[in-house]
Length: 293
Ligand code: R5P
Image (cartoon, rainbow, N blue to C red; front, side, top):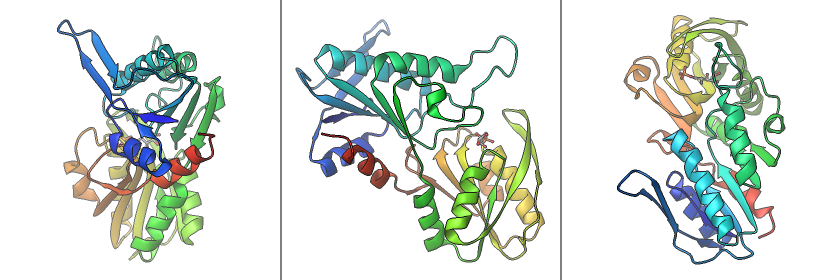
């Protein structure tokens, strides 16, 4: 096995290589003066090898997809027997239907392209909403890992007297499991999304929030508006503190607005960010160890 990265997740890629005692091969990703892609592995051949590309699809989701395809095709051209993509965060999954006439269903296009270029994909908590499983869009072997246990352990260690809130129905799959793991009560909000930046939400089931340390758990924190709406509800009900935990912290509009409503913000390191406090390395390590090197 050989490990590489196209630029995102370099630290995770290098740590995985170190822990697995396999080689990390650097990859140059750049461009020619005319803007054409330039790519070069620091290796002459991958003859007979399995290549693992560790690449989060943030930042630059479009380029990440393009880079992964380029890297996988180049690796095969250099003799690689198999190319496995480890995408700690897999983008495009939220566009899982045509919400407005004429739109692209990005998740389907992304998977169609990856199905052609790679042999296996491993990802963490992909946004599965209308799709029930990764098998709905991937024809290659597709493994879904979850950071639930890692987040549960973190909440147990860090937050006393918590109550867990899922800010929408999709997120309840995380919130409910983590609440059970830490032995806390949980509830879920019913969210209505009017646009990328405008959402409203209502509490669906009343739980005691007064004087509790509320933990809002979501898979993706993108603009942050989903978390902000949930935090407003928690404050209204007398929460002692509000913590937001995201598996994937995109923070596309920075953190200023969020910080006005939330006391603490933590994420896993599926996307590199200063809020990273939960390390997914053990999860990926276990999965890669189970593959024959
Ligand atoms: C959507 O269904 C996801 O689970 C997240 O709630 C959503 O992506 C968060 O987006 P934003 O931070 O822009 O509200």
